[in-house]
Length: 395
Image (tube, rainbow, N blue to C red; front, side, top):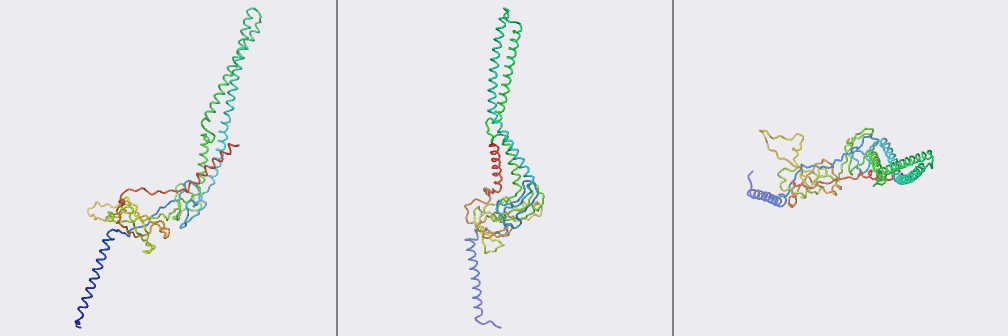
């Protein structure tokens, strides 16, 4: 069929309209790229990561109770696993008895100080009395020796006077020896107590340390959750005999999830710490948007830390673009509204317009982590020790 006279102009108009549409789209895309796209880097090679807090025993024991299982959400400080406390209870009772006995013995040392000082005074008085007896015996002997020359006393009386002098001399020596022994005993007792009180005496402190050690061993038969989170990878079983350091389960604090986005080397040139990032999770789709920020760059590429790193020293070497993990911190409130799990796939887009921050290669202070789940045992041990000391001081 031959074309009508009006067919070519209509086709021409449609072709021009299509060309104009594509040119307009290209211009709009170019304008968007110059204004926004050139300042953004994105990747879908990104995954969620989090702290995997292992629950391990600090003491050997046998598991008698498991109070949390996989997928359970637990709060920091709640018991997760209980070990048989029988042996620890016996050791604690022995340590408490030893502390009580040590306090009583130490208290006796302080009580003896006054008695020993009084005994020293008595011994000194005995020396004075013995010396007076010695002086009298010497005077009597001298008088009898004078009278003996004129025949005023018999030889027997003179002999008695000499014997009395020797006895007085012996009494003085004995009194001095007794006083020296009393002073040595008092000084020894004083040296054991000088500069201390019953509560701060070394023997009491050593016994108190044994009580604290036994208390801690007993309290460690209960394994608390160091952090709040979800339980995973439980391997503990009832009746299992565990050694210190044996992994029994893991707690994952889901409110501390972060994203590691693996960007290509060329994408890191303008990336800075603090730049904003938008993140989408495959779990929720594009309807849920997480807002995060760049907080640092890993120390090496994934291949550098691989178990078998790639070796490119061959004649058939082919350059492969490497990827480096960039850590993206997420908003805790958004995580609370839409919880994530460790290992999920993410899509990350970083806005590079802000260039005032430090380069991602720059060092930054590490994030601090701490737990107070184990503090209660120390406080309770100190209170127990104070109560034992007070009870045996007052008795």
